Image (cartoon, rainbow, N blue to C red; front, side, top):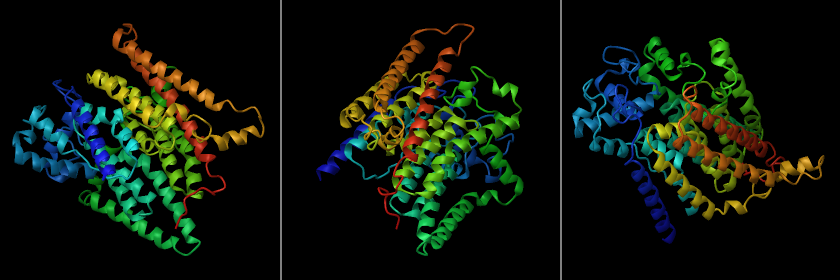
Length: 491
């Protein structure tokens, strides 16, 4: 009873922080003609309710694709349609075709927040739950930038999938991942480790004659769920192609806004977008992404384990964020989700990563006038993590999961004992840099000839941090459980 009481208090704290942040400004508030991402979610409800399905993804006089045209998978559109029916019951003006553009009111913001709420029951420790619920990145984007949680519904499905396959509920997990992908195509970040993990389990079970049956069940589950979601768009070839064009806008270039990935950071020194043909940019992005995630995926397939699965989710999502084509700054949340899942296992590194992920979105948060809630939520999150997990006391080789790697290196370099100390120094240097850059960004005006100087510096510093984390997570993946002795048994 006491445990449930404490969990209830933790959830209420999380909700209070979220709704407090929602009282601040948000993306595009009162800024015509495009307004912002809040308007995008409202506009999708307007379009899906007033137009037939065959017109949802096509440009027309009633559906100007340049004005927040629908560019998410079918499940997002169905969710928008469902919300639109509720909106019509409350106030038809919220979804009136054309007339509702830029609609803003306190009642409508309340509607957008509540229709996007998701509840996920997770059996985790109270401290772990509190830290996850107070993660500032998700709070600031959902309740600040968007003023709703529609974009995070897919994260809920992805979490459901992770818990499903981790508990050997493979069919339930595969269904959840399919729903995540069909809600938001960016959840492909998480799908590759998922399939590698299940494929590895099938290989293991096949030794006892059970793998083929499991594989057939998984394939049927995946195919059936995709067919159901895409059925209205399979009637005509042009319908299918148009939806795919909207979901994967390769014509927009290698990157768009200031984002803390390798391509935006590299453009400071080398203008790849200007010197390489479009198709070469795509191939370059694909090759770097594929090569960076290959080792972890191969290891997971050959040695499937729940722990390896969660770590590979982090590695693959981070590889996609750093190297893939047309990444948005908010996509770092797709890396943060699996990092939250290993927060209690690697508290020091996970807390550090989650701080950097929030910092990387600083230009976006400042644009939405969310400086004060950003500072408050980041400080609260750091204090809670530092006290509940005692992160500064967990920086040994064992706590950082680096002992197998260090032991291997010491076979050739016996004095290789300083890695934890270096990581502590890097942490303090990273945090100091983030604090100073934040202060400089909010207090000083950039030079006239370099108006984006501070934004670019934020992205560049964040990118360097993310590259370090990519190396770190791949090291602990490749050196973890090499003999397979500590792996969870695959039934």
